[in-house]
Image (cartoon, rainbow, N blue to C red; front, side, top):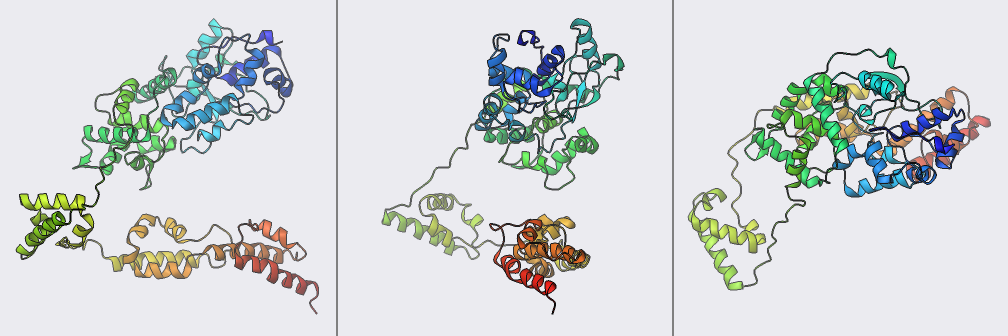
Length: 514
């Protein structure tokens, strides 16, 4: 039966190849198909990152002259993600796809929890489907059309069509068959230039092998892009100008449609132009490259530019405390004389002279602790009176009180911490930075912000309230704890006391009221 295994096509998903094999042999039972292909009846097919490659090749390797790495590079979406993740994470993903008994690649690659809106159904190009039917006599799922953000065929430059066939079948162990209704597809209008550019970038990422770029190199690249796009304020990146440029180029509607909204103050665009502490998706990178790259750089040029930056941050030279007591005393005395010679000393004035600059430089390196204690204090000539903090304090606390009053008799919901209250009126960053100036807000949080003990108690109260309403007082304490979402490991002392002492007393009273 395996001798009828089909020939793989260019850019075909591995799951599509398996589905064509099942369709060719007219196998009705899903687990029988899995037994033939993988020698296992428990494997769950994956549309984008089909795993268990080693088991598959052990059965059909004599019919398909290939290796696991080649299958991953040519018939999965991992090449689209690999240039933007760490080498360790990439090796974990390849291990998941080749050998691991349980395929965790969708979760480990971040697709399941991604901010990007990945499609749920298969997309096709009508002209590609037509060509497949004429030249091959069948159709197959092409991996490039199933990527998040792609709306155009890079070859025919026409818009893609949604087949409305879901990635995952209603039957857990079933491979999704490629669509055979090419005649029903109608040719749509040509796509925009921007969509064509995105399609070409994604095609280049899938077709070519690019070197691993470290997180530090990505940070340096985006600083370079900001400098060349004239998006700097001195040595600092002008994030507001970058945001305006991105919104003007792509429109807020397009960004929201693909899960990259910039509506919040602390968004992904701000993070990608700061020091990188995590990896970002390919579509986020492409969005910036197309909007801000002044020379319309291609994918190879971008990666070569990124690799030209240092791989690691160059550590600053460390200096040890000078042990020559006479030299130390001479420099300290010279610094003290300069400081005393000025009627109103300031660090800026002292460093203006050549001698002062030399003394400061030497003391900073070799006697920093003493210099810190003997520097002139900073003179603040500017007082920021732009914000009336008292008025703002009153305005914010009124909103917080209104929220708190609306929840007095509501025992459900998440923990009402300080962060939760702030998020209700979108002032979290303001409160985190200026809480010392908001006296009334500070007092409100002290009184009303919910601690973990209070939150756990409220969850128990909520369950008890429901039991009292249903007149159900015979339920075991362990069940009450479970319904509250608690466990022995997570329950605090106050909650344990309620569960072990107060609730049994209440149950006993309800059972024997007299």
